[in-house]
Length: 498
Image (tube, rainbow, N blue to C red; front, side, top):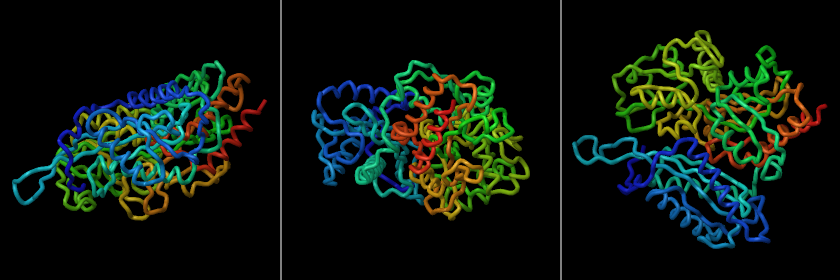
């Protein structure tokens, strides 16, 4: 990581936010914006085309949040693309955000002397662009550039403004148009499954206008609950097959967003981002690489001061779609792993300690020095954990972010036959993150009342349209438009089934 100067007060006033805290903040922002938008007669923007004025609201609390907001305003003004109106009533849209910056360690300014040190920071900026009636038009989450040339606050603000201006220039607003609320139906729906996508699904179900309860019990348990009739639909991070507890022919599987599974680690003495080759990740989880200063790790991390310490391996203890993605990747890149443990929501782990859910893995790694685990990107960010860059198919070490996860789906095929599939692991491309995945919502084909079928169809349509505009603020990448359009067609056919 580049040496940087940042004001000592950078972290002042900022406090760690839980996952649910970020979700509640996003929901509250939308509600407050809608309430404040009562100026009658204003034409509501539903697309990014036509935006001329923007109000930049707070980006969280504390000095760093204030610095982010001022930098965003400055960059927008200098762009000449939009006019910033601070607190005015006539703005087209408002930009709301949450941010958190934390210290990860220190670096000696001169490694060959005992002189001054400098603090190193990590953090994130999550934003939503909200229209005059409270609808989310666009969202994004940025993390620090790996080779940034400015301080962290400037880097986060500059990245976000670049992405926002690109979105305005393209005029994009997600796939199709849909009402802000999914349905006026009062049907209560029950769902369970994926912890990988749980932060997003909880936000969706709170803002969709429908009554949906969600139990994040893991993909496997969610599918079992669906098969037993205990829930109306399930969430899974692996596609169903013909021989599972809920056969694929008995359900409709709708991909919702893309996520990235990242290797997290807790090395208190290390101040830089670690690089991992596929072979090193497989070796660690097979138990053939046992120490952090193993030459195979050192080879990919020249100059890093790796400790002479045993690696504490953490994995999922429950039936997990995140594990399915992780083991699928390891099997793809390592014949040794494939032969030893293979692919599954559960596998016979050669080494390590288990923890339930993405939250459980993140918590255990956070509490265990010299440990490594794997979680969905947003869990690493929200638990303030370091996560590594992974060598992709093009030979580049890539740290997961929205752009690199989106890039993984560039070549995804459209279609519902078995040959098309939705596998996007280890895709080609210099800037592609290799452990990327779709995640799915699954509903039965038969045995659904007309009322519940209509309610689920409304909810899924909302997720494929309006919901896509909300997902990036939590670190999930929207579906490619061609896939979302294809899924809307499949959903229509399912909804009309008698």
